[in-house]
Length: 237
Image 1 (spheres, helix red, strand yellow):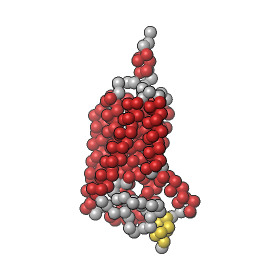
Image 2 (tube, one colour; image 1 turned 45 degrees about the vertical axis):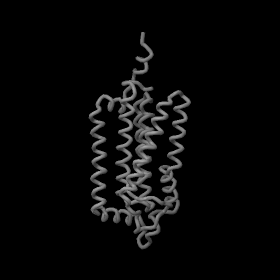
Image 3 (cartoon, helix red, strand yellow; image 1 turned 180 degrees about the vertical axis):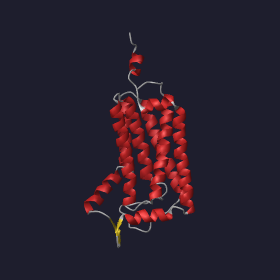
Image 4 (tube, helix red, strand yellow; image 1 turned 90 degrees about the vertical axis):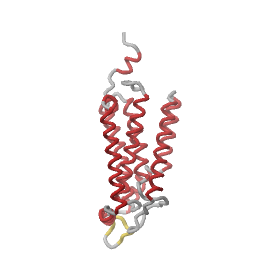
């Protein structure tokens, strides 16, 4: 007779379990993300990325009218909506809703872990912003309100942390492999679109967004590694 713990292990095959069986790969990915941020930060501080940043920002503006992004007005409004998916209010609501659900289904440790992981990641990015203190783009008009420093992009980093971490947690309890792949694709695409929207709106240099993705991915992978170490191997709970 199959015991209950054994049943819970049956059919578990996912990228999460693959990482679980190969922790060195996950550590390598963390190192790559951290190294990418370090190299990019050094290049930005040295001014080596200025030409690329300016070229891409200007390429997304109408010739002769730097206050107007390329494309029709409805597209610009759509981009603002996408950008809002990485804003503080939307991400906070997502975390609160998921944490509340985890608490209601008797998973208080997971709920607490999610809240602490996201809060600490957001604080880390805020400290990086304060430390680098890079000004916002000044060669094009801003398409939405901003008030903090530019590097790294908070929308890019925080959306990567929240959506990737939620995607990893959701994929782990999903039995269908195609569904797991779909979840990862959706979460990744959301993160990418939010970051690109910030450049289109002229509120971030492109390298701000690249750095934000690196920080967010690194933190999400680190949190995922910690979560796997805290959870029994091979279970979906």
